[in-house]
Amino acid sequence: MNPTPTLERLRFNMIEQQIRPWDVLDFEILDLLAAIRREDYVPEPHRALAFFDMEIPLEGATAREAGQIMLSPKVEARMLQDLHIQKHESVLEIGSGSGFMAALLAHRAAQVLSLEIDPGLAAVATANLRRNGVMNVEVRHADGAVPLPSGPTFDVIVLSGSVARIPQGLLGSLNIGGRLAAVVGDEPMMRAHFVTRVGEGKWDVVQPWDTMAPRLLNFPVPSRFNF
Image (tube, rainbow, N blue to C red):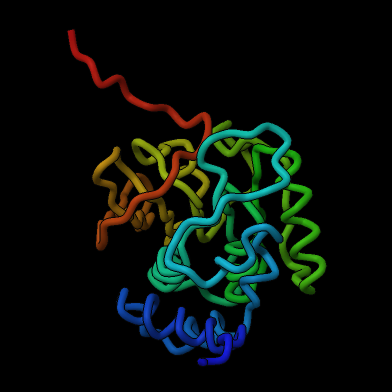
């Protein structure tokens, strides 16, 4: 009888069998995924699924809404790689969830502000991050679909969920050279969009890969009907 795989073996298999085949080949990203304990951010009832190629339901939400999940490991990893985050940069994340993506972002950036619309999940994410010694993330209970007040701008903005179209209000919160990552579209086809602010009113957009992700709450959804 084969012995039960250890957590480290499961983590290794996740990286080699799920993440590398999705063209995540940056050694620093792969080392980070090996070092950050994903299972520490997975709700206890689902911890056995921490390394599976799937979205994981989240526990602790104040109001149960569809789509409160952890993204699959390969989507988190590919998004992190394609953003090319530098150690001096500031990051805004929309959708904290359990805090795992914020933990990954925190190890690449100087500072992360993560907004979570559900107060229960905001508390869970804060507790998970502090328990794991991640101190350069502020989790804030806030609706990321509400326009940010004038003031802070960011080098990177990450939407940890899908939207029907790129939120134009968030683009104005990017510094020159800043990047926004979002999964955009409708079922059954969505694409990852990476928008770079290359100048005043100038943007470069690439859509390098397909995926699916649950909707972030409260972002506009265009009508499907025309009259």
